[in-house]
Image 1 (cartoon, rainbow, N blue to C red):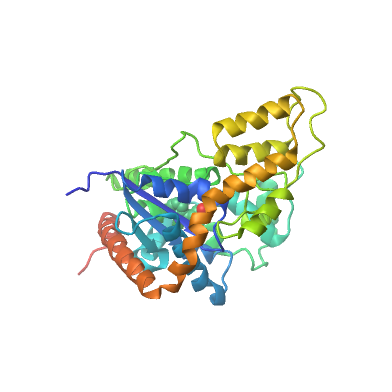
Image 2: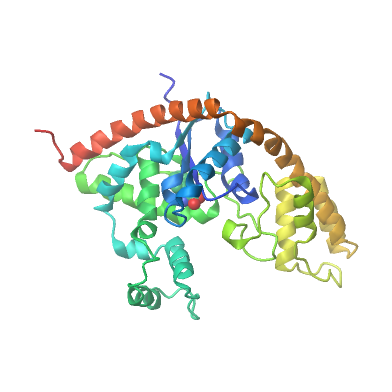
Length: 357
Ligand code: TRP
């Protein structure tokens, strides 16, 4: 069989439309990997439940991302495209793997601390990331039901997504690296506990070598839905141009070769992702000799972003309208994903000593 290709697996949580951060951290890479790997791309709707358990929105969100995957060029003939909740084997293995995961290591995961702090309305401790202070606060706030156990065990579920498919390459953004590190740790721990090499260790993948962090338009931090600083793939040109023109900048360089403020450096990062090298160096030189006009840079940036997003936006609505097609894609994807998942789960049950009478 042509099954020699390395197994790739990645997914995106279905919590709203996809933005440029998702595109450069994940989706764009998915599309480029399809010909060379055994690719499996899914929509993490169970992970979405950890923060957005709204039954009126869940399905529409899944459908939107599915359409965006397809519109961006993920080809269901080349890649397996599936919905996480269509693979019940994942839920069973999540239970089994949790027996080998410590609550301490989960509580110290950065994404848990961030989300728990947000849910509880606790700020970052003044001394920085102080585990002890944080653990006290969380335990102290134990009566607050908004920090659910699903949020705590998020990394277990993500590890299962990866390990149940025995994937070795996981194209994700920089913010997911800690989860991948945990996945490798869980895999090693499981293998050594039972003395069987059940799981290979997965690593991040990026064409440029190192994963990117896509900045937002508000001058600091990464692009993220909860940050409200996103450019969505489906933003119409007018909205998109307006967002870019309003991006935070500064007063401009006062003397040649001044260092860049964070908001301006962020605009250059976006320009590097979307524009050609000569456009980037043109604006870098203009910055260095103080002739730069941020308005010009933003106009160029908006057009270059549109060149990336327009073909996707133009296809999305047609795809969304074709329910029969979407149904076929996910049914075929679920079947393929379940085949490998069921085989791994059977192996895991057997290694753990779960036997039939
Ligand atoms: N945690 C990922 C994110 O927020 C989504 C995700 C869930 C994922 N399971 C995964 C990514 C498995 C890669 C592999 O973006």
